[in-house]
Length: 72
Image 1 (tube, rainbow, N blue to C red):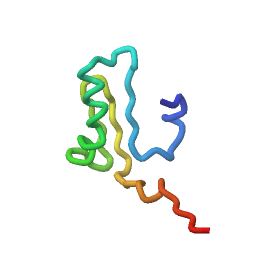
Image 2: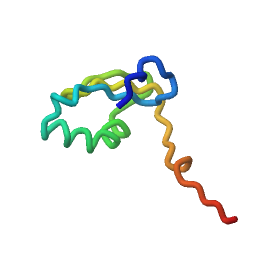
Image 3: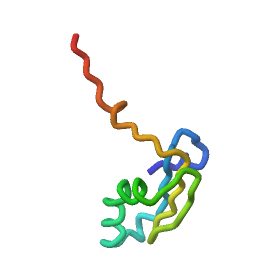
């Protein structure tokens, strides 16, 4: 959670919510959110789901960028 999200253009997907309103149902949605976005989301879309306000700028997967193998 970052305070600079509206000012920082580097995020592909932004999810905004009030953590004080997080219920068990909201926590379960949060755990499934990557699959929900992958299955139902589209670029340029903004939607609400329970307590979450979701903006999708781009849908680019970055898993390959997160693992670095250095054989030296």
